[in-house]
Length: 236
Picture 1 (tube, rainbow, N blue to C red):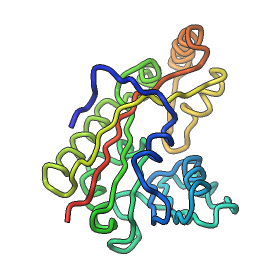
Picture 2 (picture 1 turned 90 degrees about the horizontal axis):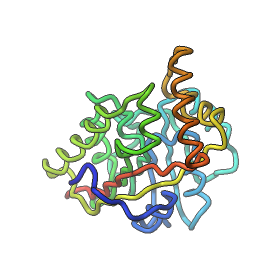
Picture 3 (picture 1 turned 45 degrees about the vertical axis):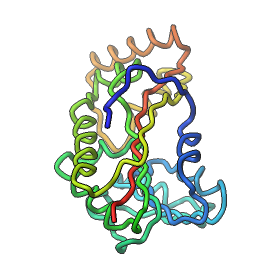
Picture 4 (picture 1 turned 90 degrees about the vertical axis):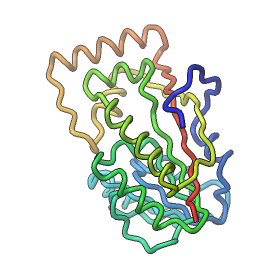
């Protein structure tokens, strides 16, 4: 396994990646940490026969997700990864989109054991994680430095492979584009997330805004975020 690579050549929205490496039709799918359910919606309304359980640990966001009425093939539940309230061998595929590093470090190993428990024999786990690099990351680090937890996430996945709980089926690296039309939109979508209570002083807020505006002058709000995908298969 590699934490990063010297050169990433592919840039695309993440759905292009997971639709290419996974066969999602007619599968039972578990998405852990579904956030605002934007990817959940895309998966649920594409293809056929996709039955999805989508979990979220943030109670505020979960309450919003429960108001969604137009996704009959999605069941939203409030749950963390370390104790998933579903039966053994229930799912074909587990998805984690940039959420594994949000699991408390002391619970990461248990989370992977839970994922193994609920996966069918030979089932797949798709875990995408942001790489600690790039312009977007440099701004985020001013108020939310994730280097330690992202490294812990990588090492936990690696140990699970070394321990033969999973085998590494594929490892992918790509850039995913993110557009912010203004700093106000960035503040709403990144600083203002409900799953993390970011408390910025006026001075720090001003520093973040200044760094964002400097980047914005060069890229017009178009950021390319480097992503690593680990595609794991449950060992028998």
